[in-house]
Amino acid sequence: TKAIYCESIANPGGIITDVEALSSIAKSAGIPLIVDNTTASPYLIRPFEWGADVVIHSATKFLGGHGNALGGVIVEKGDFDWLADSEKFPIIATPCESYHGLNFAEVFGKDGPVAEMFGTKGKTGMAFAIAARALGLRDMGACISPMNTFLIQMGIETLHVRMERHCANATALAEFLNQHPKIEWVKYAGLESDPGYKLHQKYCPKGAGSLFTFGVKGGYEAAKTVVDSVQMFSLVANLGDTRSLIAHPASMMHSQLGDEAKKTLGAPPDCVRVSVGIEEIEDIIADMDLALSKL
Ligand SMILES: Cc1ncc(COP(=O)(O)O)c(C=O)c1O
Image (cartoon, rainbow, N blue to C red; front, side):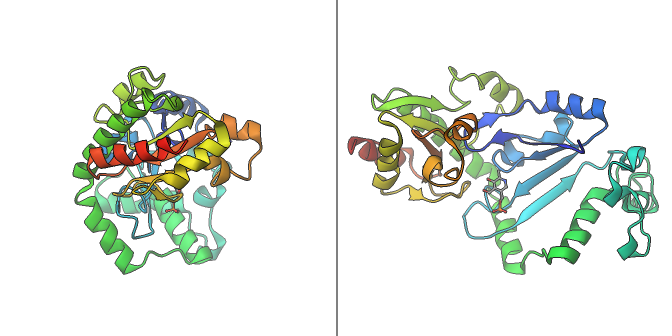
């Protein structure tokens, strides 16, 4: 095992991960904890404060926020010791032939000359981020376009305002669904009755995010009817848009999996996933109510 990889708020079910517990396992095994913080955004959860070593984001989602630009972010805390077990991390911690024998961890790590130049020697380096960027660019040409960068940076300026509204709207919609007679279950850590509520209070007291799932009475076909009947929600697999989005994982993103795997991953046949937008909550609830009235 080379790393532990998790999401801070897991997609599709909005389940909040106990990052601190995972970090203590990773530390005792001498491996990094990599946290995909896409669904929470840095406004809700700051994984480094709970022991993560690397944080990644699909900036396509909440950071950009408007569903109009593709991009991604890798942030490295910088104090992981890759050289302590260089055999385990050969790409970063042994000489790289195609870069004339450069050892990323020695040169860009926390004890190397680059950290010394930046005045962070012994504390923080950037070996993982530099290796990911240089090798990804070399092997796959991964390079964000200037327009996407501009749109994502513009989006980040309003992240805090959007996230507050996303969370308030998600809570109100979850409460509405939780008492609706056509709904079997609601899985949202922002509800006091949810098993994840305590983790929400610990890791993201400002809000449990805007992504959650619910089960529709009537199973697969009923869930499909709901996602096909909404008028304001967009039926797409994306999340983290200012507009409310809806999906039926069992027939869309998770359709290639068997029934057991779908259930384990929180995407059973009756499950509908929403990424609640920042529209007026009355409009969001009215649209959902209309769709449920078709059942
Ligand atoms: C949690 C999470 N991380 C990463 C990604 C990948 O995002 P992108 O499409 O920007 O590569 C997705 C996409 O759905 C996601 O939901």
